[in-house]
Image 1 (cartoon, helix red, strand yellow):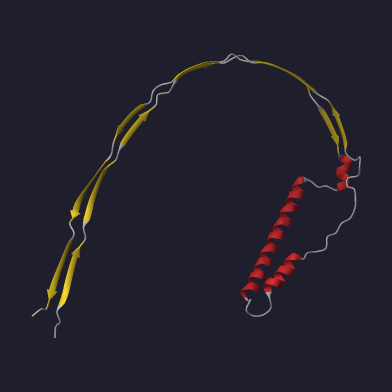
Image 2 (spheres, rainbow, N blue to C red):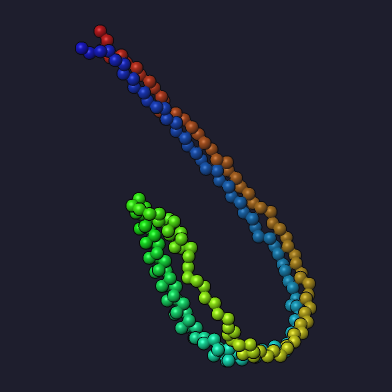
Length: 186
């Protein structure tokens, strides 16, 4: 047995839009400008400062090394600290990953990370007082300056402006429609 039914066909409407872009042209001619300034006169007379530092004894007392050796050792310490930090972070991550098994890894990690070795301090004077010898002989500077005024003449130019407005046109490209058919009616 075939029952009657309704069959609906619809077609959407479509709008066609055409645009014409606006065109704008602007031109600003450079201003006519003339600037001149006579050279200023500057006279500087100086007696240089003389600074003498003898730190030979201080270097010896501090057991300081060459800068290249210090840089190499500092880089090695930094690399070692980075490796240790990576290992510690990986271990803590593994502990947190197994949090459901037992214990309280967050509390133990917080305690472990907040404690450190007891600080060591020892009083000492390195370098010893008076091991760096400094001597300065005073210098002198005498400056005489005389500026001359600027001669300036500027003539501005008007802006050249040309504008064509844009345009938008619309039309129905496809009209909407709706068709309803009743099928199997006897």
